[in-house]
Length: 245
Image (cartoon, rainbow, N blue to C red; front, top):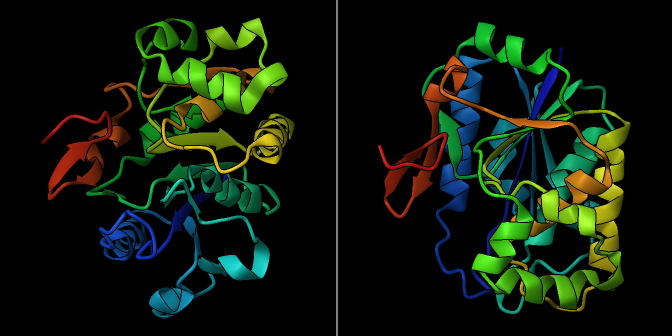
């Protein structure tokens, strides 16, 4: 099964997100996948010249301004709705798997056997961590109910409370009709939102997954490839599951 690693990397110097290490981190992501895998890579960015040395048959760098015109910031912070756009671009290409990575993710090695065993199973999406469902999370953290009320409104249905609230760092999507439904629903959320605070974006992944009827599971330590996953975080490193290493 053919895999595309899809990510987005934005220079956000005009927002309150003043840490512009994202370009440096994204280059580490690219270099690590080039070294350890034969995956193709797609980078959606507003600074394409920062990645011009990587453009090749296996690496596609897409200039955001050539494809989209949604605001790159929302309430002065990076617009998290843009995370769906590399998936949208990837879904239109000839790949079986769209492996979304946040741009501050990278790998230190790879285990092809465990990865292939996992992606051959009957799941539409595979999340990096097992966590609580939306119904319990919104009770513990009222910000989610506020987001539901202000952003989803009557798009929300009771079934969404069963949605997985998980990290959005490494997510494996099968490139199928359910991914298209996932993206269509997220588009609907964007269309009815007006400058929302898009952080806590696990809500969008969760509700879109349930709306699309996706069969989902999680990566575990039994999946050896995950032991090589790393995330840059405040000068330190997290592993695939979001724990400091």
